[in-house]
Image (cartoon, rainbow, N blue to C red; front, side, top):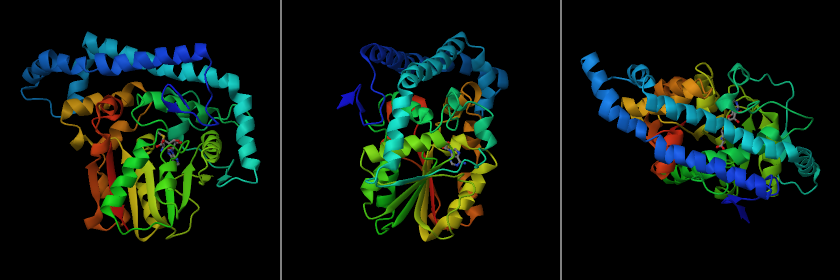
Amino acid sequence: MTVLHQHVHDMIAVPSRDEEARQEFTYSLRHYLYRSLLPGNKTVYDADVGPKLTKRLGHPPKNRHEIRPAMERSPYWQMTSSIRQVTQEVMWDTFGEKIEKRLPDLIDKARKYRQSNRKKGSLTLNPNLPIPRYHTAVDIHTQPGAYHTDLAPDDVFAGALYDDVIWMFFLHSAGGLNDAPGRANIQWLKTSYPNLKPKRILDMGCTVGHSTLPWVDAFPDAEVHAIDVGAPVLRYAHARAEALGKAVHYSQQNAEETNYPDNHFDVVVSHIMFHETSNKAMPKIIKECHRILKPGGVMIHQDIPSKHFMGGPYGAFHSDWSTHYNAEPFIGRLMDVDRPQMCLDAGFRPASIKELDIPGLREPSTMDVMGPAQNIFAAQK
Ligand SMILES: C[S@@+](CC[C@H](N)C(=O)[O-])C[C@H]1O[C@@H](n2cnc3c(N)ncnc32)[C@H](O)[C@@H]1O
């Protein structure tokens, strides 16, 4: 069964007719913004702002930092930027109000999945885990309470909200279960390492497990583990996986320093986690991946592309919007950081280090949302 193309499982807060109409409006607004309004910024840049800037600088702009102040004076950019910000907030409100009404029922269902004798996976929470400052300092991408805030005992609000919102955020392009990023990583791994038969896989920064579950299907003989810092998203993730009949072992941990032993996993992955960490956390996470991977094990991280894959300074400027207006302060930093160097510093085999676009995700719908393409960086221990 589907509602607005989303796969409906037991933990989805199914909307009433009125709520569905509101969701439709929010989707249409976002669709119109991304498909019709935002591309106009490039027209404004090419026809007006870019040529004037080149003349004033005496050379074409070299990076996004030179473009921003000029574009920020453009009324068209100001208008689309304001609509973009409002649309983001409307999205959280649209789904948040619906979920708040159903929250006691969702909490109850999640508890039942945890207590069931027939559960396939597990959930381990750590109420004493310090939540990193890069999560507590801002409501990340304006998501009220971000991923970690509990509104009630055994809360699942942040998870239920994310499950709904991300499906709209990707403009339905990631599939009914929002699992395209996971499927893309799997395809790359199977093509690049056809002989690898993983027995134990870890997904870091799993949120509600959108990208985790395809790993269960792709490697039925493997044990699949997934970590996140947020308790409410993990409670929801566990219930969602059980509702969909998938065995995943969820655990509340910081990817910078996990409690797994050395040489434990055959594959460690993440999907759109790095841009929500920090300058200091990124290299620590790569080192942690190296520690917990077995020799020969593979690490794959998927996120926004680095600036070299942005099609020039304008693409980088456009993709950097969320750093400045959407409480995602480290997007720009991830675009700049030398990912292969981080892998080298962590001790990965130099010849195995790769940074590339995933063509499967280079589709118009994701271009404006996540940058020109999704990018992976990967390495073997
Ligand atoms: C955009 S979401 C990732 C979505 C998910 N991987 C997917 O593909 O659907 C980023 C997630 O990374 C988690 N995260 C960020 N920093 C983390 C860290 N240091 N350790 C564990 N999880 C982290 C956040 O709590 C959040 O749930």
